[in-house]
Length: 113
Length: 114
Image (cartoon, rainbow over all chains, first blue to last red; front, side, top):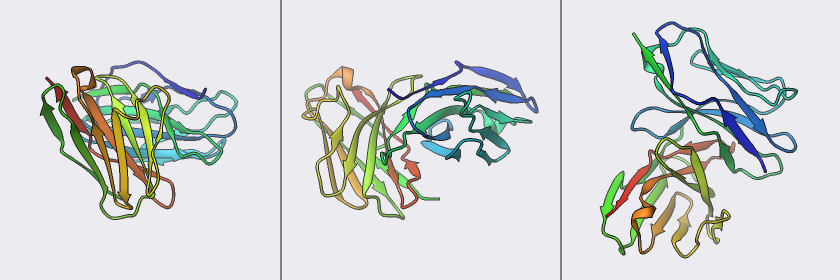
């Protein structure tokens, strides 16, 4: 079945460091791909998405490119801030009219001043 | 963006009792809502898809009689954990999708069964 694999955390960075969180997926057809962020004590928020190959999603300085050849959707940010500390979830929505999301395990990011 | 609320935010109950959790879309109508369960430091597992005016669709391994779902209106879905036991303790999260099929998540409900 469809699945999402994320790099294990926690990821600990200093402020202004470069961030990469790896995400790969297994799916039939052409899924849509998402990154969600969960700040402490809050629900998940959509960070960015891409719906077809080679699309780049971006928001708040974060970017991710839908790479079908490597089945990847890695999250990147050039300069992280303390306020970016959160848990990041990669997810896919299978093609075929179903709106179910399949999540990766989540990666906790801690940014220190 | 669209807002989804959940109530209560946390609940403690005795083993054997039932607990109802509400999920509301505050500023949009949602024909479909989803219920997830999240264990500590783990990902979200989809439990069921809640469809307004019809029966919920449960994922494999989820007990229908244990987790009752009612989607009575376009803005409200409820999850009732019946005869709760300590192993049902978890973080329950709902989501709803709008016309663009973007899913918006509620803040979650933490359930502790003693």
